[in-house]
Length: 193
Image (cartoon, rainbow, N blue to C red; front, side, top):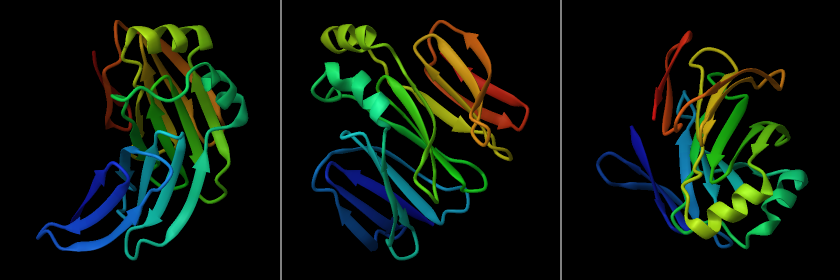
């Protein structure tokens, strides 16, 4: 049993008694979200420079560091940085094969082993630019199915169901506002608007 504390540019892993197991400095960016794998063997942290860092929980050994694709970087080129109040949700697939990050204006899914991007989605440049100026909340929400490679994610008024292994979007629903998503079991998703 442990807790990961994201302290701007430092990630602390502590046990429940408060003893620090390890810490990692993040020199180039600010940590804005993270998550453990289902088996608690991996910790991933998404940073505001649009990178994801993955460590082994047992010893803090780096597993991978990945970034959004060049195509999505172009979409984000209209803003200088993510908004100060942006956050990220990070979730692993049940088999630890994939990790997804939902962040301000987009979602990226990576293959944990290779670091390759297997799925991405970002809002249009015009929406990002207008929302950045107006301060609109565009933080995306993500969650993996507890037993498959299906990912559900939401941003603004859209919810998508994606098979990460096949990179296929199988469903798209409309809602007023996708404020939170959670798999209740392998067949049901709860959406909190």
